[in-house]
Image (tube, rainbow, N blue to C red; front, side, top):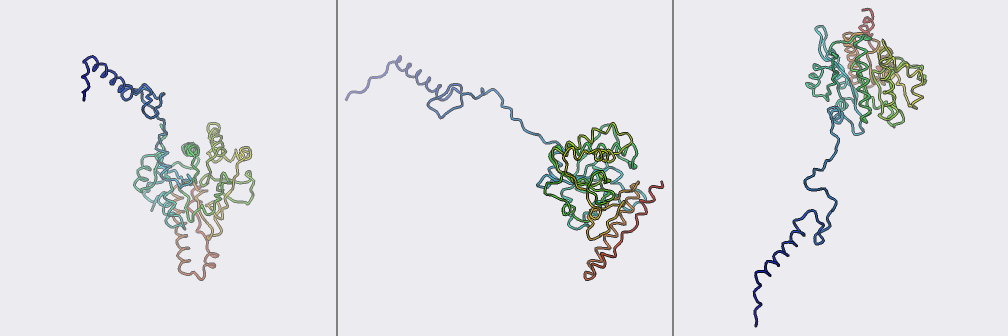
Length: 354
């Protein structure tokens, strides 16, 4: 049997070069489409280029809202400063502590604290919020000190109210609906049980006095408590509202919204608005006449924080006595409810004398 002849050096060199060329084309070259390998994307960028992927980076407010939000992107928002969180020498408690205690004493309200975002306008208020392990956000306003008590209708009070409005506009633009509540509002029952949540109402807002008239021009709204859904109409309302700031000298933001209301802004924007009855959402301007139905109590028609703290302390005491009596004497519950009366708000009445 004949054995094959050995290749000559020249032939071996040619074979080696051919194999090397095939290997380069099939494996090593990234820029040439390879018919022997699975499909390749021929338009891919050169390997020395970096692909840039754009994504939304959440800021501190996004994170704070996300942490406090309910699954349907609804939050509860309150704004505080140093005067609301620090106890004065003669006071037994603070406004913030009374506010939080009402969630503890109220019916079906404790779990709502998980969805409360406390917006603090100074460092002391923020530190106190963190200490109480709440959801906290520090609202910084350059060149402005919102730390001390801002007496009702003072220049600083009005400035702080407008800053609050701008902040809430930002929240709406981020797609969050919310209940806004002043911290001088006690939550005695879960307000969501009394609010319409079927998305037909754009704004549900409290009033100083309820007269049963659905026409906007006949109601004295109070921006200390309201529920608002985030949509294009409500964002337009807040945009228009805030745009009036510099042309409304001497007016607080609530007065400007009332002017817009009386000039037909709700109708122009096709806003569906509900005015909340004081039977459920009451205040010192008009007490609820039905303790079995009352949901919130607002220290409105009051001028100083010290007076609010005094009279809200009495409200909580009335509430605790009512609940204790109902627990102890369930067989005469209807009589207890019928005979109940709130204590007089003497601190707030006297606050207007100073």
